[in-house]
Length: 347
Image (cartoon, rainbow, N blue to C red; front, side, top):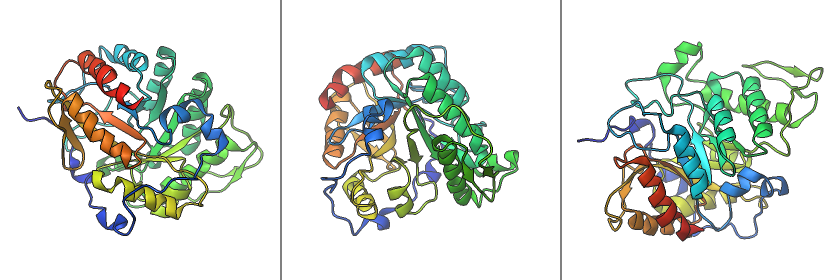
């Protein structure tokens, strides 16, 4: 039976020419995180220099033959991931079922779900991967993110994206073609509203802050903001604006080159963590070697995956967001195997 995956055409644009000139080995020695991020409960759990951590993309299970996951065990799987040593739970922003795209994510709204998960779990980071900011009012995003940060004791990571499904934009009366510009504007408004008191910030596509009102709550220390995908931004923006970058459709041979490019375009002092997402099919035979298809669909046994991911860690990769949609095995069995066989090799 053929595994039903989302339409991968939007995920697999060839970006190889962007990184041809960079050296293969990562050149991040001497670069450091800002102290606020190095001490942040969620950020420091997910992004650790020299280590590789693992997150799970909701609904944390396989649903290979349908765009609609069965969610009766959603809470149980989130708690199993927390107890099993995973670094993060990632929530996608999929407002509609688009038959042409073929995947509904975790179905539930990401902010509502993030609040629910913070009450269910103890240590694991809760992140969005990512909020489609051109389809949302950025000040509402800021309010929701800061609220979850406060309620979770700093376990929230705000990942933001520009969106990749044109069919959704008319429903929100938004222009698909200018989403890159609106993404940057929304990012700046969210940053300003969550960082400054009685802020001043103008915008072309959204509202204006005039310094006469303040948004509460403010994050306990800092609100980590992560770029999810390219978001149609240039590499210099990715190197200097977000606190970390999580991509998809990455050629595994180019991980070191990507990291070098970002380091070279940065300020020369700040370490920019880089991770990526894959669809993963965990096979029954733990010794089955891992093989990558379409730069996004990875299949192999647990031990084969360990060997594959060890190579990625050696290139400087620090986080993997695993989407288990293609996996046909029972969800609890898969999470247990990953917790017992894979995670200890990277602890």
